[in-house]
Length: 258
Image (cartoon, rainbow, N blue to C red; front, side, top):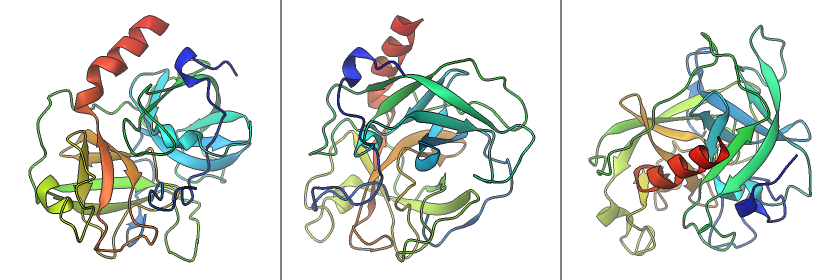
């Protein structure tokens, strides 16, 4: 696997609690199994055959995910599973594809939540069809209004005991304003304009969901980043990296690689 110039960082990628206790990573709790293949843009990023992170297919060769998905991978081999509902069962259009390069945003760091985006170039172009499709992402830099109902999907744990699903799960969450999210009882001013928050009262994204899209009105608005060490803790709303501020970076990476 070839590493991109901005990804010469140890391949680190388990989505558990961050080594920095104040910044737990990745965090579907309180959701449901999704109808099979109704979210054909979902990608399972895997290291040595084990799911570690979600992602969304934005072109037939590129996946958008979270930079902290590179934490603790121990130099394992990255692959992308597309067209899947079940991680283990045979499915007609499921394919495990090699990764050509991983390009994390140059502003990202394992010590912060800033610029937590990752672009994954696949080794080959993926044939699109009913079970494998692209998802549009928001290009207009505007806020999603508080109260908007959005959805997160993923193969992350479904309980704080660590139970991992084999099949894709999804949960609907309401957007929380940045002002409220930055209250001292929540995230105490740490949520920047490049981030957004969603409610976490017994329903939440959880460990293993990092990198998956926050979808509002059929468009990806954010990427699962971080939240509480205990998923579903209403005091610590989930934090998502907003996509619109990074459109120029995404476009530039894709153009330079082509």
